[in-house]
Image 1 (cartoon, helix red, strand yellow):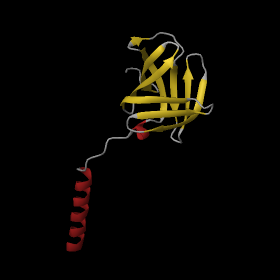
Image 2 (spheres, rainbow, N blue to C red):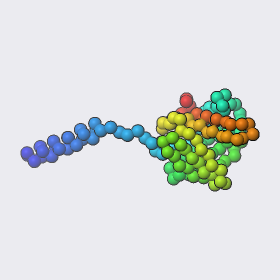
Image 3 (cartoon, rainbow, N blue to C red):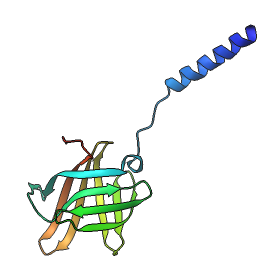
Image 4 (cartoon, rainbow, N blue to C red):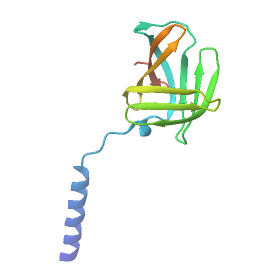
Length: 136
């Protein structure tokens, strides 16, 4: 009986210590995979209507991605992420670099800086919701 009591006490201490431990914040690579819809786009701080920008990001756990623009044109390839950067390498050689401004499991904000374009330097800010999350 005393042995059973000791085993139960040890099990209780283990469960208590596990339940009180701090969980670490998820990393971008843990939160990144999913089907992301672009809800708002800002170019150089201005809201954009219908322009040739991305409207859907499909990011898979296996490291692959698909980007879809408003015209239904797709880019596909592989992606990598750090805490601050998402890099997408398309199979045609195009590289898309995005700074991760904010990210949770349901929302993400990315910034793409393009320098030397015909329009000058551009900062494109994407506000995204995962799947059916309708509010940013």
